[in-house]
Every structure is written in C-alpha cells, then in structure tokens.
Image 1 (cartoon, rainbow, N blue to C red):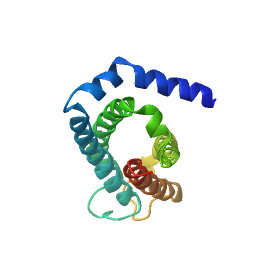
Image 2 (image 1 turned 90 degrees about the horizontal axis):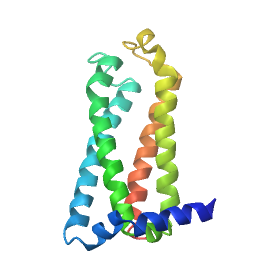
Image 3 (image 1 turned 90 degrees about the vertical axis):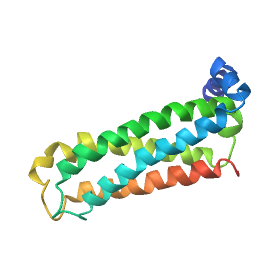
Amino acid sequence: MLDLLDSLLKLLQGSALGQTVRSAEYLYPVLEATHILGIALLVGPAFTFDVRLTGVGHRVVSVTTAARYLLPVSHIGFAITVITGIALLSAQATVVAGAGAAPWKFGLLILACLNVLVFHYGIYRRVDEWTDSAVTPVAARVGAGVSLTAWTGVIFAGRLLAYT
C-alpha cells in the first residue's frame, strides 16, 4: 500500500502540473493565496452551520435555512481548496508526504469528509423533524463537534507542513 502511495506521489510530482507549479515564477504563491481563500469559504460557513447545530441561534434561523445559505458557499470553498491543494501538492508531493504533519492533515481531512457524508446521509435526512428545535439531536451535535474539531485540525496540520 505504501509503495502504491509513493508511486502516485512521484507520478503527481513528475507530472506536467508539478513541473508547471515548480517552474512558473508566481504560480505557487498565487495558488497558496487562493488555497487560503478557499479554506475561508469552506470553513467559515461550515463552522457557522456547525455552531447552529449545537443550538446557537435556534430562535433566529432554522437548521434548513442555515444549510440552504451556508452549505453551497462551503461547497465552493471545498472545490477551490481541493483543486489548489492538489496543484500545491504536485510541486513537492514526496517532500510534503514525508513531513510529520502530513498523516495528521490527510487523516483529519478524511475524517472531516466522512463526517459530512455520515451527517447528510444519516441524521440530516430527518431534518424536517427537528429543524426548528432548540436542542438538535445528539447525532447532529456530535457531527458538529467532529466537524469543528476535524477542520480545525486540518488547518493546523496544514500550516505545520511547512515546519515539520
């Protein structure tokens, strides 16, 4: 399994994308800045939605209304972050993968994405039963806690990639 991962990382790093990101003078910093903006668009609305799931603002906005306005923005941020993240990784895939924070970042990223799937295909399917409730179901609050923790960890680990 590790040999396959190593081969994929070398393939990405040696690709035309990797060579372009390494050789174009301002491309890497532009990608990095765009990646940060994507993170803001992803995590800001996701955190706001998660906080609503914990019960904050239940008198102001329903869960479904919060989802309708916040989650599409978060999806755009996710797309920007994935695209720029792959491009950034392509520049030094083997070096980044060898950093001490890499397993944490990618593990927490997988956890965050799995949490989204479990939430939307689980408890959220019955949201109409509890959208206006002052106290959301335990599963929704646990999902919010996992989301808040995982995305915070992804951000911290991502920053630590440069230092480990």
